Image 1 (cartoon, rainbow, N blue to C red):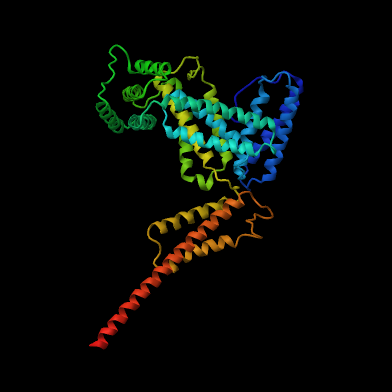
Image 2: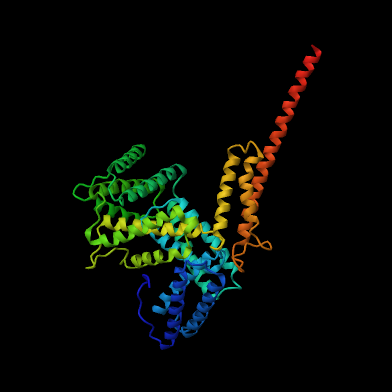
Length: 475
């Protein structure tokens, strides 16, 4: 099984049958995840989900007097719920409570890393806050349908996320609009520098260009560069981080100056290292870099090929690396902590990978993978029609024939008003039907616009001929 955290076996013999059952459920879910010969069916997912809830009920009865117990049963349960959550998205039931489990787990990790990194933009927080509210609505809708234990757990995790969000928002609340603009620019530069630091060949010129941008901002703020005579840039950077944790309620200008200083120190550090990571952490670095690059490449093909359950193995690998840290530090095999450059580089890759997973989860369409080929074709048609609309429409209704033929062919695929796959009615019918109707409506508007323009042109041309004839008769 993939990288799940290792915990001790259950001490209560009554829990062993539960462990055996959920291990079997996890194995079946893993096999189902790997099977690409057919699409995932709702009834299969619901069967495993109901089996899992039955085991949770048994476990809660055993642990009535020991609620804080944590052993291997809990870690395997977490594996199962993560998989079930991603399966709910795969079958298009994104708006239901179980689908929230994986999303909120990823967001909790992401928020922890934003807090640890010590810099983030308001847009990061706005996006997360927006989706937490959506997930809360899904939980509320599921009060009568899903396990109270699962809903209570989701409520608690969302409350933790809201608490961290409030803390992060408060740290930015002292920034006025002008300071915020500079702050966001610095966040962007620092993230860009961290990305450049992980290139296979160190891009010295690009780093130098960002350094010049930082010096320009320094001039605008009438600041001077940190002098750290007798100390390394890494030592001063670490001191800056420590000061940041001690002065979280600092005013806006202080926050911006501190971030500017960190950016300039980070430029100095990565220019000295030239992208070379400490040998002790090369294995972890290579693993995180591979995960980050793979997740980034998925961005090009996500809509057409990503099955949400594909994210599970990446989540688990990242979780294992994250949970292997001690007091936030990455440790080598001898238990020695990483230097600041390695520490911040690994943390960046970890955060960036979780950010990609978050992006894919929140952009998952509420449509079964069985209907995704149709849904994606309609999305492409809609984009094309919208682009035609933006560019001024069509010269003739005939130009719309290819779009109309494709839309009609998709519409004709329905049986009794439903998009069927064999004898099954996959989830997401409403989303596909609504998108189809939207495409038909745009095509209709373009046709009407073209016909109206033709009529106006004909009327204008006709009026011109009559006027000319009148002159000739008069002559």
